[in-house]
Image (cartoon, rainbow, N blue to C red; front, side, top):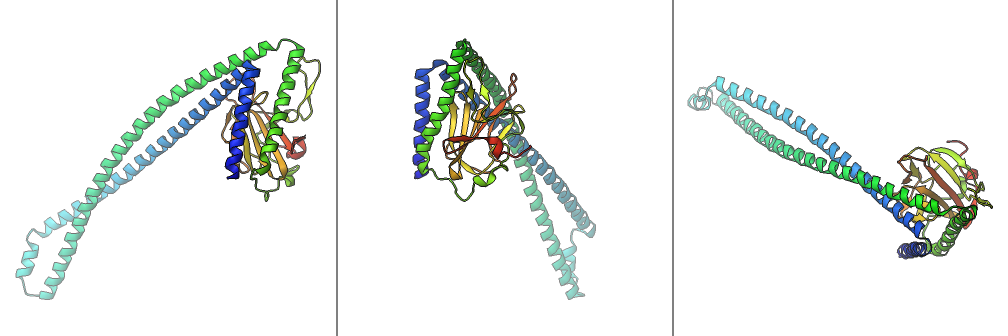
Amino acid sequence: MKLARVRRHIAELTDRLALELKQRDALSARLREADLGVTEARRRLEGLNAAELAAERRRGELRAEHARTQSALDAERDALASQVRAQYRIGRNDELRLLLNQGNPAAAGRMLAFYGYFARARAARIEQISAAEARLKELVEQIDQEAGKLRSLKDDVSREVAGLEQARRVRASAVAALSAQVQSGNQELGKLQREEQAVESLVADLARVLEDFPVDSRQSFEQLRGKLPWPVAGKMTARYQETRTNGAPTAVRLNGVMIEAARGAKVRAPYFGRVVYADWLQGMGMLLIIAHSGNYLTLYGHSEVLYKAVGDSVAPGDVIAALSEAGGAVPQLYFEIREGRKPVDPKVWLRAAQ
């Protein structure tokens, strides 16, 4: 019940932030909708790609079973043919002759028992052949169905690729419009300050909501200082408390680090925790926040797609997000650690080298 209540409060918080953004900054709201469109299109595309791979794998399994069944059927037919040929060589009236020849009743009984066994074995082989033929027919139908499903999935994937490309074009247009709005250093400073304030306000709101949020306190986050795995493979391009000016007259400092990574790189949870935020935030783009034991938070910004939702539990190595696959600037993950509401230097926590 507590988790459901917290989820509801966080959903209300997310909706309120979106409404406030729309009322305050139309261009940023447009960018939010574009980013949400991209992440949803990419999630659908990745789901289709996974379904296509599963269908291809299933069709391969069916083909392999078809080959095994056909081989078994051929073997059964050969065995039955051998039995029929042997029966023919013995003669068609052999059992009747045994009954009429009472010279050795014991031998006749044994031979009749043998012929009974032979007849039952032949009947069993005929049943096996019939079952194998029915299974072959069923497999052919299933293979045809999987082939049709695969063709449909390929068509869906092609349409979704086009949809993702269109969503990315819409996003690029929104980014360009927002950049054109910031023409002077003072405007850039205001933008940076608003972005910084958006994070601080969100963390403050979450702190109030998370008092009843269930996090496994047995998994100590504190013990990972200096040993925390990097959330994504790459190199650090901006460090904690590094200044951001972008032409502004006054600098705004980073509360986290920027990690440059490969296109489409997967972002992984470095430790146990529970997702407390998974949505867009001004200056962070698609942002995911994980609550850990000891009142610690980890933040992951500038992702293109998020794979976890509020309330989801995560374990070390779980894929939680992915960076952009598109061309243009090399993707960079924003990573931040907070002890309560206070930001701390991620470098102190992360392993020395990847």
